[in-house]
Length: 439
Ligand code: NAD
Ligand code: SF4
Image 1 (cartoon, rainbow, N blue to C red):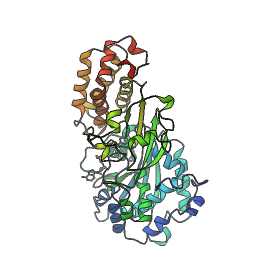
Image 2 (image 1 turned 90 degrees about the vertical axis):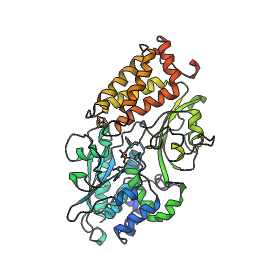
Image 3 (image 1 turned 45 degrees about the vertical axis):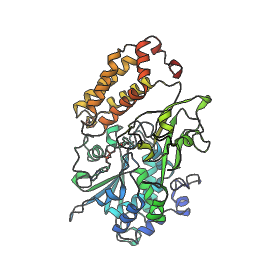
Image 4 (image 1 turned 30 degrees about the vertical axis):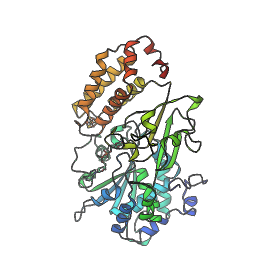
């Protein structure tokens, strides 16, 4: 069942006329007849969890929003999708911009935000124009601006382009950047729900989360909550990449197994050239890499499913490995050391530099991984790497530090023999042609 991408194939759906003709903006009509509290209640009933990666219950986040007398509140849409392997929000904004705008209007009404912001990743250079056109169309048709549809509610949506920094996807860094400052994360608490944009109460939600508000209002929170498995309700967008026959963006039901997702023709269509599956990062680079045996089956030997619970079973991650839905697949020819080095370089480059463990540790990890990958590593470097990642985790202001530590920890935990092989075979280690056959 598709809730978000149902109409994605319709020609011209990016534009207002086709979108409206196919049922668009019905949820706004319905929402404006409800009270804001009733909308929050529907979202709570739906069990919707944040689709940016943390999986925090959306209705609960909304109910935390402070409402001091006379202080404006804001909704901010986090469209700074920068997690390696994650591109599902890009798809939504590019092909279904009105779905996001519709979700934003309903959510703004529920939260009392008269000025709502979309903060979009700088590298998505062509998408702000698409969003701005959709906003203009919505405004021309009375869905935005003053006194929306005669409801007495005013709402403007502003698009703000980011400068291309990964850290600005962290909600407090995003807020700092939106305020015109350097995007340094703030210490939490206070959470944005209490003191966010210009220290006003602010809800920051991911693009997919806000788009999901549309089907929730249309079908009712209870019906939405019946779809899925356990506390994973509704559907989920996944962006699949790496060694796959059919990489792309898929809307999946939560009872889909990981094996079906990778190998069935309906989804990723298996691994090219009949190669074997070596490992996968199921939810964007901030979650651990898993070897095939742990990826396809849980600790009880049951088929692992694509939902928050099944992908957190086994104690491999602090949160769920479903993360931001960035599904990265590695075939038997891929080198885990090289892959980990590449991620370490990324996190080192993107660290904002506020906390020493992250600023220094990410650089040390990258240098050590580079020397192992290029045949200059020593056996004791593997333990040194382990020690550094352990000292970063939990000791930083924002989750980037943890996100930098976890890939290194998981790679050593599950593929230590591959690190050792590099140390023992310095010359071959530089050839790049490294695979399962080596051990
Ligand atoms: P978090 O768990 O700290 O917070 C989740 C949300 O809940 C936040 O909005 C926070 O303000 C709110 N919250 C939590 N406790 C609260 C409380 N007591 N009161 C009020 N609000 C509260 O996680 P996070 O830092 O928002 O996100 C981390 C995740 O982001 C990672 O797990 C990673 O998967 C993901 N991520 C995604 C991308 C991407 O491009 N989509 C990039 C990097 C990281
Ligand atoms: Fe900056 Fe890294 Fe500290 Fe986050 S963990 S605040 S990115 S130095």
